[in-house]
Length: 307
Image 1 (cartoon, rainbow, N blue to C red):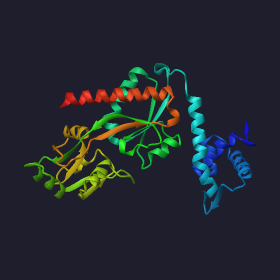
Image 2 (cartoon, rainbow, N blue to C red; image 1 turned 90 degrees about the horizontal axis):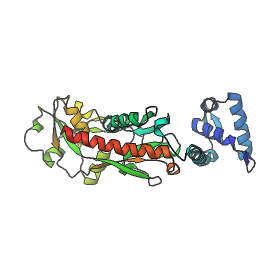
Image 3 (cartoon, helix red, strand yellow; image 1 turned 90 degrees about the vertical axis):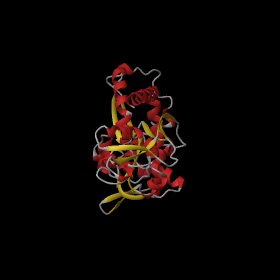
């Protein structure tokens, strides 16, 4: 099929080329031979009257025209995919669909076990691809590399719909033999202490964002990429970790730690699910969103029972 004299099949090749910036990897991605991909690139260069990809040393780099095309081409393909994938009815019990989600290790340890358990009951053949969070989740969503993001409301894009799944409070975690475990945990003691903090990848943790708003500067003595690890890292020290309450309670079952209320006005984290605006009518995505909300309620009941 052609549109304005462009073979629309070439858009798939162009997307792969601009994503991989390599003829061989692009060919492998969409299951073409390398010679067929080279031919597609030649036709694209002729149509756009631009080199699109140029050899720089041992790698290929996109031209400015290619950079301008990249997101637009991906958006077109995401729209087409969403339209083709949309079904008038989605039957979970008969589905073997793969759902790709970006989740933090907090979500992995607290919410996802309930999600997978509920899904197994309703749709035993449904599959999950759980991927780590990145600094720009919106880009992953818009490129069609994830179906759903489970992220704090503060990090949700205004360009795509989202809905809240759950709220989470923060707490202080201390080694049970720490000098800070005795007496009241005041704001002064909290701020003066050494801290173990989470810095996930090249992004900013939500607690850091909250602290900045409060004008609080902590003395960071250790940083980690994982939301799970601070509880272990305070053991044997007089440091404090600021953690999600649910994770802290899980850790307290296995570690010699104590949990205290945080003495500063930290707002609750609002954890949301976000999906691409073109997939709102996707009945499979709608089912998964409902399942996530059911799982969040199940998790809340389990948390209340464990208190």
